[in-house]
Image (cartoon, rainbow, N blue to C red; front, top):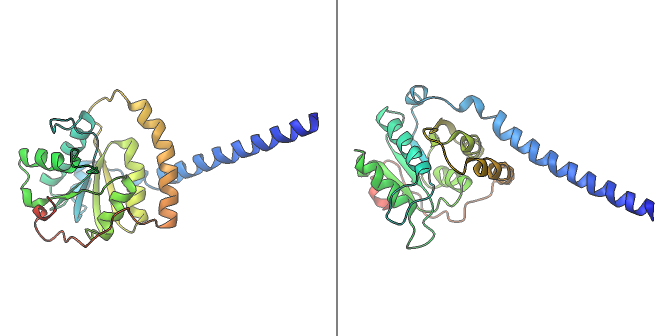
Length: 221
């Protein structure tokens, strides 16, 4: 009986160790391969990107961006005016008629002086990986600058490079966020998930017809 229990315990420990190795390895891959591609706004201004990608986050019922999203937006808008790219892709969740991150993000950019025609909405950016897949395969981007917080940038840049784009990221760490510990914890699992999506070249949930960045962004409203 003791031998059976000992064998089961050894098996459980072996499985647990293997799981830890997978999470540690995939997180290390995402961070170590992209850390040199996280730069400041000055460096990004000369990158000559096709588009700046601003990754979505929560929007309040009145259409006001949450603090974490506003920081991303301010980052992306600053990059636009610095000349990092001529277009901005606002990518977020528009899974229901009553919730539209992209529209709120575009309206915020317009209120800050960005021309409406230079702002594209990616309504099917349901995840970071899907945003990057669609930026490459729907919007046809080859070079992008990504605006989000540092904890998120490693994965975002990893995903972008994994789907075939040249990508750098600029941190939007302007504020302190109440749920930062939760974001950091959740990101461990998200990096592992995206590592395997990149490995398997998983297509996004929705692909659809190509959208040229050479036209007006108002076609995506």
